Image (cartoon, rainbow, N blue to C red; front, side, top):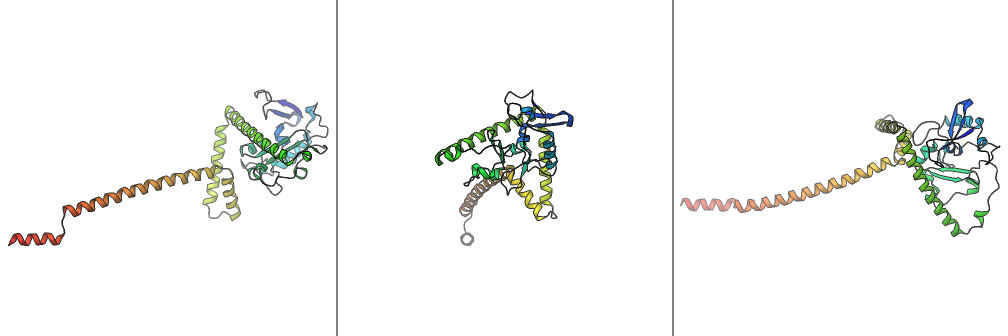
Length: 283
């Protein structure tokens, strides 16, 4: 495949590098290829000649595999980027993984390109993954012994810096990605698709015939995206404010009732005293 760079992207921009195979009418982002779970770089890969980094046969095979996989973020097929947690079944398109706040780990020296869904982000876990067993290698390279020689404190400090850098890079990529969507006139389409997905989720939750498994998956998807939980938080906040307003109104009404009771006793004396006064006057 021939390596090309987007003419509209700034130099060095993440996601600007693409690979094209004109004879098969295929174009793919470099990152989409590198992070695809079942993809392997060409055995002829040479850092000095990036045009032979990927071969068409491998790309077609991965595209075929992706047709069976649904993205956890956009709910569309073609999600070839899987979470590195073995027990996790979440898959993404690469840019959908960024939008879903997935953790991206890159080690170009060792040919390691990994994605963790937000639930399994190593930065949020106490037990980190065993790099020797979990990492996916893109081409044969000797194991590095640098990490083994580092002290525990040095490793912890390096991990913290790497996580911070990764989050900053991830945020920049997401912002740049949405800006490009806006420039390309895609934002309206994206939000329409999001609304359609939410309407579909609403129908499933309201339908008494929805299976328990599908019901649970829909609920988990709503909470995993973050938007649903934020809305519930806002609703809870608004409900609390409404409760306080009603309590204040009740206190004001109680005060008014008490005042009216006092006025009633002053203006209208007891019935017994009134009857006695009338009898005296008649005599």
